[in-house]
Length: 356
Image (cartoon, rainbow, N blue to C red; front, side):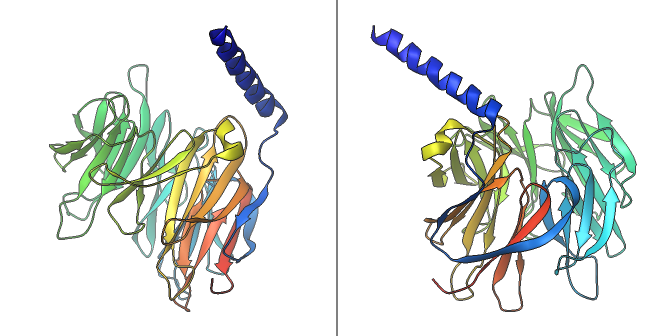
């Protein structure tokens, strides 16, 4: 009888989740918690898909650094006031899931593309330079770039179900190492330390660190199972940001859990699909806060913005339209503002307007 009740409860939960997905009855857009008073205003709006990445870049503009705003089909470069300076449409077979920009010098940048099926490099006009495509025997999951041998030319590291591949700047495969890799990042902490490429082997729950030649330098088993992998500079560099179910985790480079936060309440009904976070100096006389945007699963078209105080307490939470775009930019007042996507083609700025 008890087993029958458990089965009934489980079936009801599955049915409820199905209904929520079909009718779109997810958390309503808006602020849910606000212990720190923030001013929110529209920073940029254009005809774009959901904002996937926001990144500050230095293209030697007389007015200072600029902001690259990515959708899946295009990138817009705007100044620090949100004025459009340049638009680049991607000439790709389909939308790019994880676009990024690599600035080589003031007059040249590249765009990298990676997704579930392919990876590649585009020029600054959005045209394909090379294309690394999966086939019936290869599945591509992620790509990162770096200069591990310090020769001034970038390499590309592709995570596939057949191992980690290193490509040269022209997209030619140099080597293939290891086993199925789900996520890949380049860990470069400066000229005094050896840069490494980090891969996530989710089926074994391992993080592997390799050098430029692909040699395995070390391997760790994190305290929690990792399904996503982002670098995290809060409360200091050398941390990883990940998620599991509806819980945020920050790990050190030994895989130890430094910080965790469970969404809880209504959000138990859905899981985190993607995560990205940044430290942000909201107040010039305080340590950095931590802001993280979480894209939810199950077709909810929702993301959650959470902001944590320097001691790790949740002080702000807001439901947004679908986005993974977030960054912090410094002001002349020695504090920073937060830029966050919010649905197709919109970016908002957040700024603390009084000392807590």
